[in-house]
Image 1 (cartoon, rainbow, N blue to C red):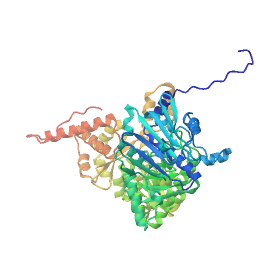
Image 2 (cartoon, rainbow, N blue to C red):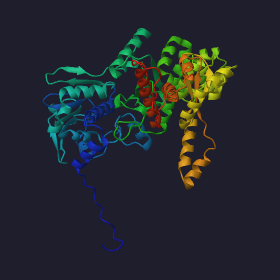
Image 3 (cartoon, rainbow, N blue to C red):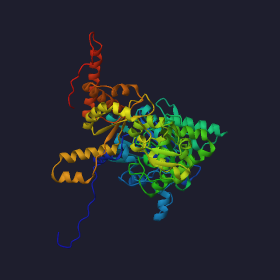
Image 4 (cartoon, rainbow, N blue to C red):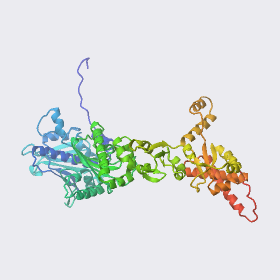
Length: 625
């Protein structure tokens, strides 16, 4: 080749087997999509024919048994169409029925079809070695019947058949399944797949078994669009649809309607709480054909308490047509559907307070997530929301009426530490350790004047604990000194107070931040060089925990009178261990060892003290942790 001589042009060669392998392993999630593609092509063919003749029949028949086939009464193909569209990989036959159009008109016309990628029939090679298409065009009077027979190795033949081979326009696709894919064309599996993908198709779809028995797999219109005599009858019908689709009886139903994107459907409210992290499993249909039954991107994350079934006209599918394309349209639809569910919540507070109470008792976490970012919903629903408090699980409005000063803990364990004592002292404390709770409680003054909210700290609790008289403190001085020495190893101080309930022997006041600071200080003491300087710069003090002994408790009063050092030590360890367990926080290795040691020592003391001849409490050797 001389310089500047034009390069020779070549055509890509396509390895059909390799392409089919790519489809089955990387594009489609399962071989079952072959039936979806066949149904989709049949629907599009009927749509094209009805554009020519609105009175044309619109039926799809799936035949199982010895031979598997899908027939439609659609527009069909001419011999030229067969050469152009079936023999050219990737070219779509979803063209308009009326000649050449400009780009805008072509886009509008193609929007009437489900298929957008021209893969269609090629997907059938995922389960079949041979595909036969028998077709007759409705565009041309007296059009011949054309048979296209293609194999997975890339070879195909085209034959013209007698007119009586197919008297009416339309197409029949017959598959010869591979031995390893016969399960996908088994009669029961085909019926299952047809119902799965085509339950909302707008044309009649019938599955015929080998004995000639036909089963219609779809009813039109969609369940939410059907007419009913009464609202109760409609509600009963939608409840039945939810049970058939999702296998639960909904708490309520929410109609969804977005005409701008041709979307309609229904959201079913779950009767039981679910974790926010669980996949939503919404069912999205595109022009009646199931696109996905796991479309969790359809609704905002906070709306995890509903399951949706929708049918849309203008949402964009991905290349595999098994998910929604993440674009601006989908984002707008998600926001609009979220607004519809939010409106249902606000309407419920005025129209059906009883149902709202039942809903909030189950799904309060979702409403709390939404209320954090929605001021109007916050004002409307915050008083109705339940919280864990020292008065039990009550609504925030009910709790605020009893406690003008509302205290809120930062963590669940802090609430569990102080709840019994705070409740007995008349303090109103809310558990702010659960997701969203602390933030929401602090916003209570915005909607309820005269209410004050503050974070609870150990000083607030100790201020409500009564001091013992000096004589009592002096009498217990030896025991308290032993206790401070024993618990000093755990960065814990000891105090003697009186508080209710008297059944509580001790209260451990400690918070997560204080423990983190003590850990940082300990690491700084053990570290060298730069790392020690870094840890030292992060804080200047290590607040200590405090074990508050209740002198109203008979066990504590007897313990304060112990004069035997080893028994006093074991008693202090046991009281501290019990307070640790009541706090329900993770135990360190040294704390677990203390619990085990104190239990065994007290058990040993009890057994030896009851032996014949025992006169004094025996000495129990004490080991350092």
